[in-house]
Amino acid sequence: MEINKDFLADFRAHTAQLEQELKEQSIVEPAPPYAATGGAVTQLSDEHKMPDIDFEERQCKVRLHPQETQNAKPKYAFDINEIIDTFGIFDKKCESIDPSKLIAFFKKHGFIRISRPGDDTLTIIKNQNKILKPFNWKTDTLSFIINQFADDCVRQALEFDDTINKETTRNHVRFLVTEIIVRQEQKILRCWKALDGVPYNLNRDKKDCIYLPFKNCVAKITSSGIKTVDYSSDEIKFFVETESMRHEFKPFDLEKRERGMFEQFLIFAVIGRSNIDEQPISQGEQAQINAFYSMIGYLISNYKNPVQSPAIILSDEGADDAIRNGGRGKSLLTKAISKVRKDKFRGDREFDPSYRHNFADLEPYHDIYILDDVPAGFNYDGLYTNIVGDITAERKGQPAVTISFDDAPKFVITTNWAVRYDKDATSTNRRFVEYKFSDFWNIKNTPDKWFGCTFFYDWDETEWQRFFEFLIYCCKYFLTNGLEKIEYDKDFDNFRAYFSNDAVLEIFESVFSAMESRTEFSVMDFVNKYKELYPYERQPLFTAKNTKKYIDTYIEYHDKKIQYEKRSKKWKCINDSFDETDDDDDNDNISTLVDQLPF
Image (cartoon, rainbow, N blue to C red):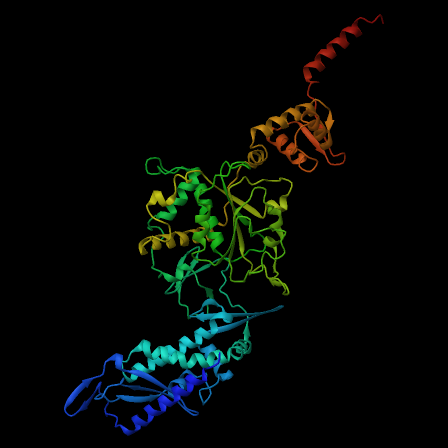
């Protein structure tokens, strides 16, 4: 950005004239907020005090002087060089940026350049009391320097006179600094690379404790209780900003805490009813509630057990692959977790397990990876390697970066569809734990309507306190009891997933009954019979690729006495018509014939 030469010439001429006039006038000592002339007192208002910027070769001066008035005299003058030297990024002529001073300025304001093996991406983080905030260095650097400089000048000017017009002074200083800063944009941005590169030094939970950051301290939770730790302690590393840091931690008794809105919402979602005062929670219902508590604590903890750190699936009770209900409260639970842990969110069809750049924007400070509302038939197996090992974050046009297992996030997946289950895939099944929501909450009965407010947005500090107390309780429960699972009838889920449509079930059973009359049959036997019975189907329901899953699911759910042989790739029907009664009758007949023999 070039300075308009005509404007600058006029500006210099004007300021030179003012300089000369000021030299001829005496400055009142000590400088009161007025000047006296012939016994008359003239008050200098804020509107009359204007900064005058002089672009001389050696000095840049700001003088406070009265606007075109006859009687008023300037109160004083001060040199902007003193302010610039304090700010510490310009050279002696106030014309250029000093790189070494600018780097010191960046460090003073808590900026850190992150360095990771194999990653040449320039990542700048701003550290404020061990709270890390990602900084958009390409777009925000110039405005940050200009605003900091202007604020610093105004602050120091107020030390001379607290009645000056702050906005006017700030705008004039911004004008001066902007001209210098914009001309040297590339030089300024290159200085970021001169910062010493450091790794992320993020605070990590341990196997036996969880750290939750608040505004005034960090809450350290163990199975035995809660302690507070100051941010200045060497025990505490860096956190990424979360909602909890806007609230102060207030000590409380875990045994006497009040049940808040969110905990009530969760209990109703788990057991499917709200009349817990009239009909107390049963032992079986409490076991389910406790399992949900343990799951919340597990997700909050960013410690990852190398032996068992499964992904969490939040699904709907009674779901199938045909009707999408939803609205059960699954997403509300993931939002609750994000109030204390940094998450990476992917909605609906934004995540494809086969896409190589899925994790392009994943960072080590993301503790939770949320896959929200995944479609029916989602390929859960595609997440297996990302759950059990390191994650490769491959950015377009850049080398891939490896995020270690310890720093990789935990996965939580929500779906409105039935989650299919393959009992033979034992290694995969161990990597997923499912928790089902009842239909208590739905499109007609929402938490907002029930409680009369929007969760998180309309809460007062008392409700926030109850919410954080509940999350802390969940953390303590998990540290004490581990991750508790709920056993569901997955044969029923599989059946609902494949045969949610009655028409599909009717067609399948008509073909399957023909197969049962045989001693054995294969996939192609079933498909050919299907084509024979339903020759006019434009889009076949059963093909060589999907038929085996349908048959296996149907046999499993109905406990049919049919076995599949991998070698022959055929199902063998076990015929029970030859029973013990028939055996006895045959034996009796044989004995009679023997008795009738002549020898």
